[in-house]
Image (tube, rainbow, N blue to C red):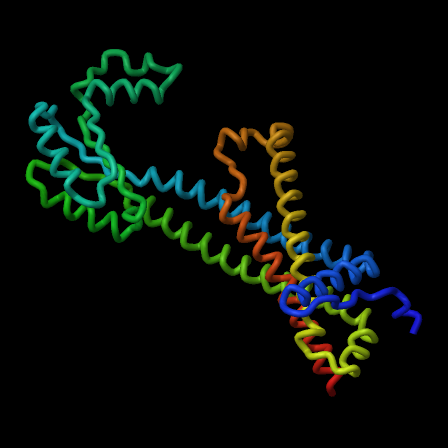
Length: 316
């Protein structure tokens, strides 16, 4: 009985407040009595959530990159003649009236030649003698985000062709299809990997917390023998799991942010581009909050799962 020589908290007041104070005192006493086991549990939750958060960070930035690339899904209407200002305005108004249209930009022949020369920077002499009249004028149309799939672009182009006075329409059908196929594949792979990581994390955390409860099996058996209810026995462990999960979530976010900052400041040594200039971003606030909540849920569920197994084994 030397294990129970440590002074245990006593319930000094009745009611919900008294019970909560007692449970919190029990949690603090348990964590002080078993610091190594608690550190192992918090470390396990931290490592597990850090792996998930690293995956989320990569996935979020891939999604952001895909969103940036999707803006290149552009419909171009070429005209073999220069439109008058009135014709430009009329056609532009009719294009803007289509709900899927996000932005319409008119590119005259002079502007087209200027862009052409810009792409041949350093070799502009190749265009000596070429006049703007040989290049077509065009409308460049950017679509709204929800209208950039292959089917939506096809339907949009069909509506454009029904407008009178329209020129030749091009939108890189094959590129659009390949891009949307890539996006769908990336999301499926992300969902599968994310689901696997979550299951692995739950399994690891539940088994780690089970070890902490197993270390106190004698105390639990004594409480059960003296008539303590299941809720009375479980509550301190559930609160302990909540605190461990919250601590693990906070530590994983701090480590993730440190890793992110370290990568940003040292990436120039091994990458040929600047991640900050490329738009690499940290996790949004809602993802950070979700990770903290996930830590709490992991701690509570891990404790609950381990307690159920232990109590079922004890009753058996």
